[in-house]
Image (cartoon, rainbow, N blue to C red; front, side, top):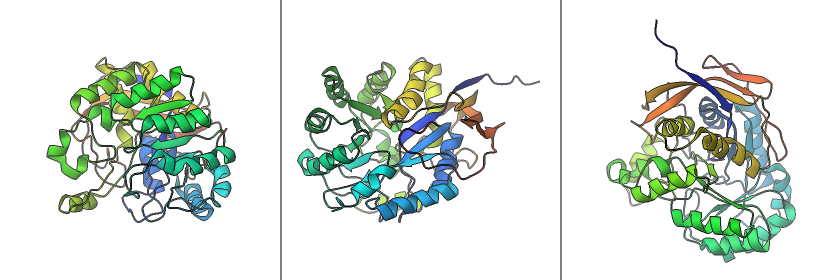
Length: 373
């Protein structure tokens, strides 16, 4: 009789950085397929970013459209960010969006839906307005080439507003944030799985399938980032789950443009559990960086009954439908070894997965600050 794999039960994960793509011109994902991938990846909550291609979340109407879709189709609770850019001219919309949003996302660098680079000064009026409207809701920063010290000095320093620096790809950014923390400023920083498990060398063999913003780091920096996460200098892991279809990625291979972003939320926790097995990070740090701290940043609490039981079996990640749940149909982690498959998942008193199968009913809630999940 085959030996059953060991199981562990840990708090469910919270991902405060995903791109569900709906509604938009990008058809690689829907709220339904993305939330399903998150559920089967051990997540109880995901927070959807505002830069939907062709339909950025810059108005109350678009916010409500997104929320209505979540109420109809999501497998797990979802929160959404408000968006505002210098070119969006939506100062009159922000007061209506703020009560419905978990935070504000600012894109100072080039990415999907934004082709420009900005300085911190370009956003100061927006940040001041957000601080007046929602002083307790974080400002999420996609830095680009903007001066990080200047950003933190204004948002976390002058305004005293909680600021989160998204998807670091370099240890120097972590040092800047650590220095700000020592000064008592309310700032945190996150890292993505692709910035600790992949390197810039992968672009040579994978092309557009290994391109995102910010780009992959050199191996030396990747190893340093993993160490900084393990030691607690990096606060959280955020997936930056940003799907594109295979056709879109292939198309960018043969043009002068780029197609930024990769999927992969299904494999965040299994990759980290594999890293734990190899002695690179503790389970305590995994739980803190994927559950406790992300929930804290966006002002949520996890019920003690919101947890996941993992079967600790090893597997190799493949582009197979039973593994890749995202609507994109591919993963940047192809061929990597991972540990853990979800056997049971609950959100508060509701069972969503039993014996590895989804049993919970849709829809789930749109989550706001102060919610207990």
